[in-house]
Length: 74
Image 1 (cartoon, rainbow, N blue to C red):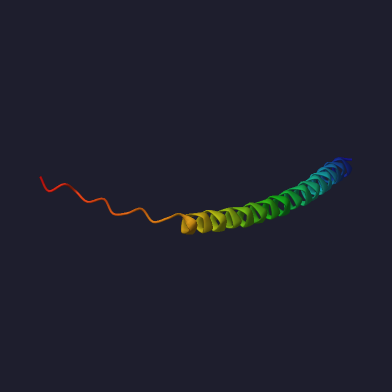
Image 2 (image 1 turned 120 degrees about the horizontal axis):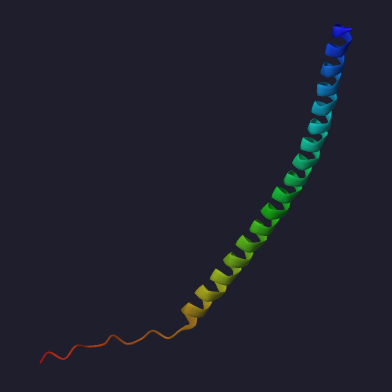
C-alpha cells in the first residue's frame, strides 16, 4: 500500500510539472511576441529619428552664415 501511495505522489508531481511546463511555454510565446513587437517599434523610432536628424541638418545647411562679430579694441 505504501508503494502505491508513493507512485500516486510521483504521478501528482509529474502532472503539476506538466501543467507548469505548459504555462511556461505560453508565457514564453507571449514574451517572444512582445520582444518582436518592441523590436519593431524600436526600429521604427530609430528610422523616424534618423529622418528627423536629416531634416534638421538640411535646415541648418540652409541658414545663412552669421558674420563674424569683431570685438572693439578699446
